[in-house]
Amino acid sequence: MSGVDEVNDADFIEIHPMYMLRWEESEQAHILLYPEGIVKLNSSAGEILKRFVGGRLVAEVVAELSALCPDEDIAADILAFLEIANDKGWTRKAAQA
Image (cartoon, rainbow, N blue to C red; front, side):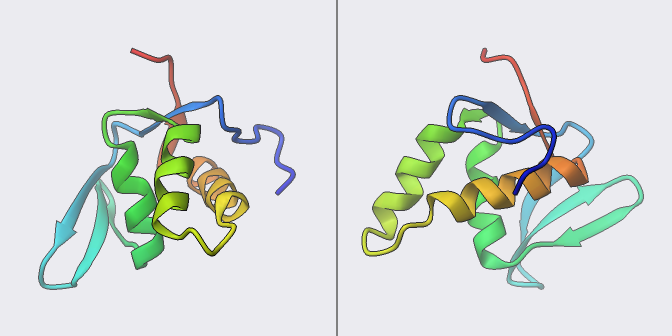
């Protein structure tokens, strides 16, 4: 993606405080709750976002997920998803704690 505010490996990303990520047993999916509603995430989105609860470096999460899928080059897909999540306001760049 070529957004104005691109996500890169050195960014520290967290779930935006307006959202709460949780596992919804009845949906068998991760969901984002916010004051106006709910977003049901697909399994890939849930696996990525759950790693950013509390905030983490993008490079750490990319390395962690890449180790789970050693035969696939998923780094670009993770970054592309994080740019979408950032654009939608689900996540935000933050200062490292």
